[in-house]
Each structure stands twice: as structure tokens, then as C-alpha cells.
Image 1 (tube, each protein chain N blue to C red):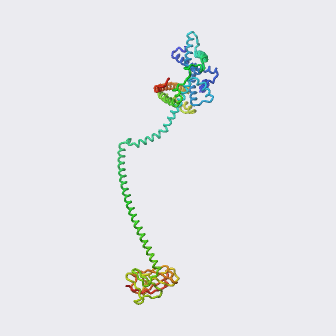
Image 2: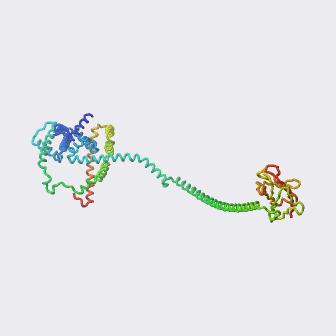
Length: 196
Length: 311
């Protein structure tokens, strides 16, 4: 469908899938991943039913299907909206005391995040770690000039550097989430009254 | 580069929901089909989130960001990450700069502490330091002993001097008393005329008038006992020329045997009286001439013949 080379086809598929996920995210749809999967499944069904897609317009076809899914989603959300008064007791939005306590202790939360980020950054290869720290060195104009120098040093265009940094950020973000999850797990074990 | 900047601007507006529906669809179709444009969208999203985390958005962007962009929980999580990341990076750079400034001070302190720790010294230096310590310690002990002895000696000298001073003060006090007694006695003798031929065991007084010849012949001689120490001569005369007068005693041959400044005369009974005390040993059984002369002159104001009999 995407390419005769299975590897290239895989990359193109992943690219389109990421684009569709981003589309639903930017449109404020929840959950974006589920809607993206629904879009891909529909396209696959159409192709299975013998639909023909002109070469080079796969992504446009995907986008068209995604728009349909999006509009259907909007209609479904409108139907499912209900006032809080008619919700059953167990459906009421609530705040768990422990989570509320966590929200109040922002400083403790930040310290935990910084500790996790420290561990996550340390786990990066040295060159990668230096690069991302250098990327965020300085403020405003100095930071921009610093990034230009960094791109020159690495011998890549500025846009490529930004993408590299984005990929590292994604890794760090995932690492941070896992690290904090481990911390919360440890906290739960140490707090018998905590109920998840 | 310019194209990248234009795309960034377009993508930022897209992320903030500031594009028309048509513009949005064009952007969406493009990033779904164009991997490079999609990557640029991700980078623009990072920049936008970082700007929000660093409070660098314009007021209009801030409103759009919080109303539109932050609708999804995933984006809220990404903002939370960005805030933590920015805090982490700031902390890292601040920590990297602070130790550089503090390192020099710390190194200096560390080297000083290292130097002050004898265990870190080489063996030769430790032995030398120990020897020096012994020598200096011995010298200091000797100096302390020597200074203590000097202090004790000085204390003894000071006590002796103080005692000597007290003795001298007592002597001075006694001499003053004696001097006062003598002055008082002399004054009394000067005021109270001594009768002629009055004899005491120490002082013999004679009252002489000018021209009066006393003691001519054996029976009229003035007796001066051997026990007499002094002879008090009270001489009367009439003269106003001088303030002070000298008394000169000569023998009959005219040879001066005694002279003294008698000072100012006292007025008495319309005349003047002057008193002198002459050592009794001066006189032998003989005749003498007593002269009263104006001080600093050779003018003889009065002349007395004084015949002595020593017994």
C-alpha cells in the first residue's frame, strides 16, 4: 500500500499514523490513539473491500477518513454529555485525599521530579546528555545564539537539531513518568491508608 | 532558514487554534503526508510549551494556549514535564557555575587544611618540625625561668628602695623638726635680749654698745667659760645708711679673724640692733675689736672693744 519495500512501507505507515494521532490530539479528541487506530482500521477495511487509492495520495486518503472519524466523534461526544446532577454516586468526579495532598505539596513534587530527571539525564549517553543540556543553556537571545553554535558544532541544520532534541525530550519524559510511577508505588507501600 | 521560520509561525498559530478551518486542514494534510513538516510541528510544539513554561508567551498567545492548546491531558502532561525540565536545567547550569566560583576558595582552604595536618607532611619535614619544636620549647622554658628570676630580683630591689626611701623621708622629717626647733630657739634668743655676762652651758651672750670698752682690766673682761660653744653678740648702733650689715672681728693688731653677714638690723629704742653668733672657740683670753660695716662697703658704722677672759 505504502511502498513495495516493506521497510520503507513500515516507515511511511508509522509516519502517517503519527500524523493522524497528532491530528486528533490537535483537535482536542480523547483518546487520540484510539481514534487514530479507528481511522487506520477503516482505511484497511476499505482497501479490503476493493477501494482503489491513487498512488501518492495515501496520506490524503487517510486524512479524509480521519476527518470523518473526527466528526463522528464530535457527534458522539455531544450525545454523551450529561449534567453532573444525573450522574450516579460512583460516577461523580472526585478527588482522592492522598492525591489532593500531593497537589498541595508542589515543592515536594518538584523535588521528586528533579531527582527523577537527574537520574534520567544521567542514564543518557554522555554526548547526548551534554548536547541537550547545552541546548537549554542561557536565556532568550543568548540561548538562540548558543543553539546556532551548537548546530554548527554538530554540523546539522537548526531544524534537525530541534528534532534531535525533541526525540531526547520524549525519552526523558517517558523516563520521568516511569520514575515517578515507581516513586508513587513505593509511597503507596509505605502508606497503608492510601487507596488507589 | 526563512522557510523554517515561516513554518514555525504557521505551526505555532495552528497549535494555538489561531488559523481558519481551511488553513488548519492544509496544515493537517501536510504534516500527515510530510514527515519533515511533521517533525517541525513537534519542534514548534516543544518551543511553544517551553515558552509557556518560561512565561515568555504574549498575553494573546497565553489565552489561546490555556484555552485551546491545553485541552488534552497529554499536552498538560507535556507542559508539566517542560516546567520540571526547565527547572532542572536552570538548576544544573546554576550548580555548574557556582562550583567553578567556589572551587578556587575551596582549593585554597583545602590546601591550607592539608598543610596544617602534620600527617600529610613528608617524614623529613615531620622530624625537622619535631626537633624545632623541642628547641623552641626549651628556649621558651629557659626564657620564662630567666624572666621570672629577673622579676623577683626587681621586686626585691624595689622593696629595698622603698625602705630606703622611707628611711630618708623619716630622716628629712627629723631634720626639719630639728631645724624648726633651732630656728625657733634662735628667734627667741634674737628677740629676748640676753643680759650681759649671762652664762649658759652652751651659749654666752654679750650686749655691746659702740665705743663702750668692756673688759679692760682683768676684772672687767667678758668671761667665756670653757663649756661655751657659741658667743652671742648683740650690737647696738645708730645708722640708717644700709639695709644689711656685716660684723667683722679683728684682734688688736687689726687682723681680721671672723666675718659674717649679719643681715638686716632690728629697730630697738630708737636705734638699731644686730645679733651674731660667733663660735666660742674663736676667742682666747685677749682683746678684740668688733666692727659693724655696711654690707658691700668698707664703711665702719660702729666699733666695739671686746676683752675676753677664757676660763
